[in-house]
Image (cartoon, rainbow, N blue to C red):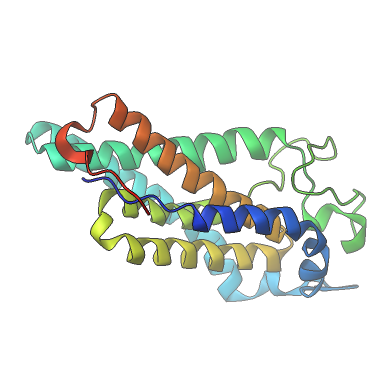
Length: 225
């Protein structure tokens, strides 16, 4: 496991998009809403498939990482152990703790299907404004999209394939996020917020582990991208 060159272009672009997407959230979600029908694509099989399969897939990834970590410890396979430990911590801290444990529970932003523009009773809340209109499992940020974006973690583990991992992660998170927008479960800004959280978690965790020598000789190749 070597240090993946840092690139702030993607998270910076996502942050700019997040700041601007408050103007696009309602119009974009409105493309998938029909009065009297609600979010009509919610019942289609591709959208339902992505919605239902994503938690199962991320659970399978977590199980595989635990198994890889155990094997790395027992077999004294240092590179496998380090890569599995990093990836597992990134999963627990990013999509797990920060996304589902903190933001979705405490930010309080109502989902599209909960606001008055789409048949609900709540008011639209910009993405970076905390709210009290939702009490549990709220809109900001998207947990499903974060699970898809988690694939970008491979860029820090296999930096020679970082472009492929980033493309895979952004594509997976974007597709899943689009499905959640079509369902009325999230706004565009919730999806972009998930990308930012996952990306920064990966980067900060890697640097934190590296500075403490927990990655040993595996990560002294500094980056300049």
